[in-house]
Image: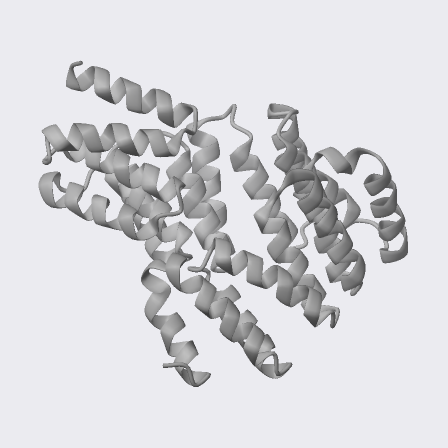
Length: 321
């Protein structure tokens, strides 16, 4: 099989989201051509999708050492930094990808999302508007512009999100944000009634809408109902993010034992989530659940990756050698 055919097989596996098989295929290519920078960059991309951030970073460093920074490596670097929640570095990498020739909207949209995470709304708006100009048929730029308007409590949020929904009627996220914008125009008591109606009807099949409704309940001060809504999303969609948000809502509601069990499951699945780790450790120490904390930390060690040292540090604080 020619090198081109091998890469075609990698593309096929990536499209099918068969990440483990894609790694094997890429390692076969690299076994024959260790200096293949394109294969290394694809390996970094696939490892990132497998939540193997350390392996992704190593492959990406090797690719750029061999062939320099390209639009592809810069985009993957942006994805890596975004996954690590290093928003400013991610934004810089995505900008570099765009400058190096990535003509898609993804880098610009991610620049906008990074600035939105940083609370830099003008910069986020500028990047989203640039993406809208680059592809006038795309819905995602208008969704982002609507999110920014929502953050600023601007009346045009509904109009912007209607544009997004019109461009992609099947985009569940754009629809969920449109519903959020419409609900935010209602007085609080009427808003909760509409939330209940949605939960009994159309919301169940849309995980993004369930998340919006849960968040609205948190903002209204009803953390128990927020946790229930996140639980509905978790049970219906098998959603790790919903499990984490349910845990946070339960913690705010004072249901610490239930929250601890969910936090534990989340950490064993994603031990590199630093904020989650700090929240869980602080909560368990505050409630005196030190044996439970110790057990969780010990179970995290085999899957902790680069966080292993920090976990050993927490165990030493508990008196474990």
